[in-house]
Amino acid sequence: MAETIFKPGLEGVIAGETTVSAVQQSSLAYRGYNISDLAENATFEEVAHILLHGELPNTAQLTQFNRSLAEFHQLPDAVVDAIRKIPTDVPMMDVLRTGVSMAGHFDPVQGDGETELRRRATWLMTVTAGVVAARYRLINQKEPLAPKPGLSHAQQILYQCLGEEPDDTSARLLDLTLILYAEHEYNASTFATRIVASTMSDMVSGVVTGIGTLKGPLHGGANEAAMEMLSQFNTPEEAETWLRERFAKKEKVMGFGHRVYKNGDHRAHILEAELRKLAIQKNKQNWMDIYDAIKKPMVEEKKIFPNVDYPCGLTYYLLDLPIDMYTPLFVCSRVTGWCAHFIEQATNNRLIRPLSRYVGEENRTVLPIGDR
Ligand code: SDX
Image: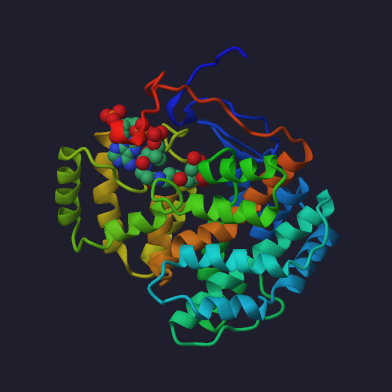
């Protein structure tokens, strides 16, 4: 077998072909639909349909998809009981990992054909959202709420957390972040999910793997880390002082940089424009001054641009959502991309098993223990 090149972190390596999305410097598109067009003219349900079924739904297809979501929305009691037992200081990402794994024992979909996999993906959309909402209620000493009929997915998440229908701005901005977070080709958590599919394992194991991978602050955990960073500062001057120290120590700033995008993240541009309007609407312009105090030197001096997590953290914060919930909300969206890739891999599979180059010691002798 001819030895191929080795690239740390598989940087720049094409590890597969996909029709789910295309991430390029010039554009981001889900199944050929440009992200700015989707952000402007679609809902998260329509985007989820594109990812799982391959195209924008017509009215009948969207009605059917929404009916499937509504049919699945009730979390199994055993999952709520399991969540009750988890100590309140456990991060919500770990609760989500456990909740999805527990729900897998009550999977309502039988079979593993493409149709069944798509239905299981739709069910997992409601499970991830349900676990986030149930946990939010329980750590606030409230009982989980049954879903309210007739709400959009984003409205339902906020309703089942807050106990009342969200205002239009909150629902629209959550819907926008769910669209922007839904899919991003072979990012770490999606690639991990594809590896699970390539061994012919099950979709629940694939999503639990995705959750464990996305949690890391170099990946999805950056939206929480970026907001933890910003919340240290009371003034832009404090932020700039901190940043200069960070530069001196050559330490990374969460929410910035990207393995693929080197001239900026299309999603960050879209979301930042909405964030600026939200800050004015909420009379929280001071937060944007702090936000810009970090962004400006990163872009102008380091040429390192915000990724989607930077504006998203502050967006969720201005919507009064707890920081511990930000990466779990990323999961509620990315579960659609993970499952789309799981299905693509499972239906046209070759086991994913790369090589490694051995660089350790060789030809060592096993001495009797008395001589070691
Ligand atoms: C997501 O892959 C995806 O598509 C992911 C994602 C998705 O939708 O699935 O887009 C979501 O995970 C976004 C990324 C969220 N992570 C962060 O915000 C964490 C901070 N970012 C960095 O850790 C970093 O930018 C990565 C991990 C995102 C990308 O790292 P790379 O490609 O391995 O780049 P690198 O670490 O080799 O950096 C190249 C240079 C280095 O400088 P030198 O050592 O060459 O002098 O740029 C510097 C880095 O130090 N650099 C940063 C930086 N990111 C890169 N310096 C300061 N702060 C940063 N954030």
